[in-house]
Length: 73
Image: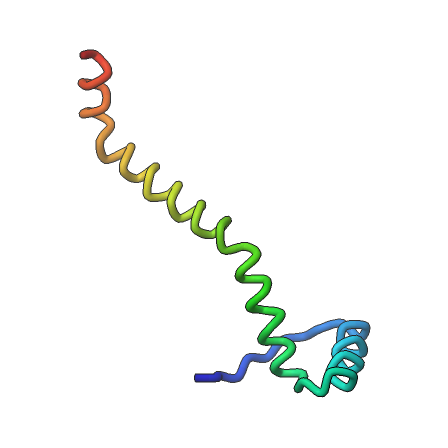
């Protein structure tokens, strides 16, 4: 489901978007959605890595005493 989203972009971006839309016959809204999807895909591994590291850090804190006992042997 599409929801409205307002943002400000630079004049050069508007001009480039207009040219791209005219030359490809793809609506500007669709081009913007595709660009957002590409950006999300490009950074997805960074996002997952950060989330994973937060889980690991949390687990390490929760189990600090146990880890110390295991380290002693």
